[in-house]
Image (cartoon, rainbow, N blue to C red; front, side, top):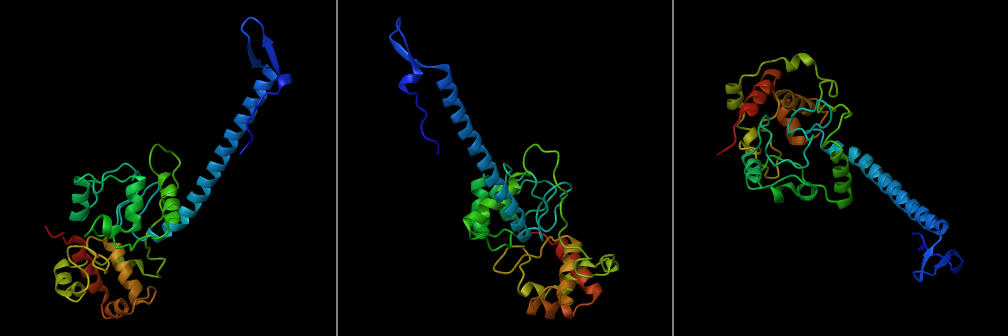
Length: 263
């Protein structure tokens, strides 16, 4: 912090008519220059702090990008795209199929602001119980602030957004793209789903087990093949996926993709 700017006795001149004293122009210019320098320094430091937070926030978004996209060309995946999320009512994008819980929260007045997004990132289930958000939460307030600083750059007027990064890709897991071309039978998938719904809830709510309802077909197929091939590690899921054929995985993807929420 700079010291207060004061004028010395030598820097004052008397005005007989008014009996008042005022700084010489040179003294006033020095005061203004000092004050402007302080403001400029604060602006530079604030911008640097925001940049550091935003840079760290981009890295933290790696925890989110399995489900969400943000940036130029962002699309809905397992979760909705996050462009212009600030100021948006919860559950309000017409072309994304939200859980009943998220739509009810929006109808009840929940709007995504820095404060509400911070609360949701801290404990999603506490803010919107029974939503499909399977993320356990981000414990550190500084991490949440950094992530929100970065996401804030994708809300409001802009013309130079970086391209949206993909969620899961066949190349990432060494999956033959022809497997994604298999058209699954949702009725057969419903028959096979009995083992799945012993853990995963058909209404898409999260009870300690992630939701698999309403996923894009490709994401579902890629995930199960990643477990089947050992690219994702989870003993139960590896055992279940290891018993499924390519056609059975496609059928389960079709079934859970079209599954509706409970009323």
